[in-house]
Each structure stands twice: as structure tokens, then as C-alpha cells.
Length: 43
Image (cartoon, rainbow, N blue to C red):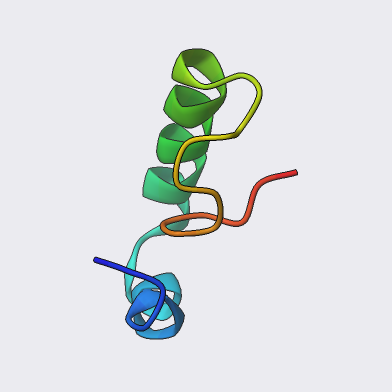
């Protein structure tokens, strides 16, 4: 996965998975500095 594939990935993944992935990302990387914007757009 990478930035080039993210638009199609955003359309294909279920919302519940997006929420779970976002929660894990915020827990493991609270400053959101690791791979920003690659899998999710978090702020």
C-alpha cells in the first residue's frame, strides 16, 4: 500500500476497519509522525 493506491483503498475498505485502524494508529503513534497520510488521513 502507498499513496498511489490510497484513493481506491479508501473506497474498498469497510468503515469499521477504518475506525479500528485509526484508533490503533492514534494509540501507537499519538503524534501522527510515522507514515503520515499513507493509509489514513488523520489530524
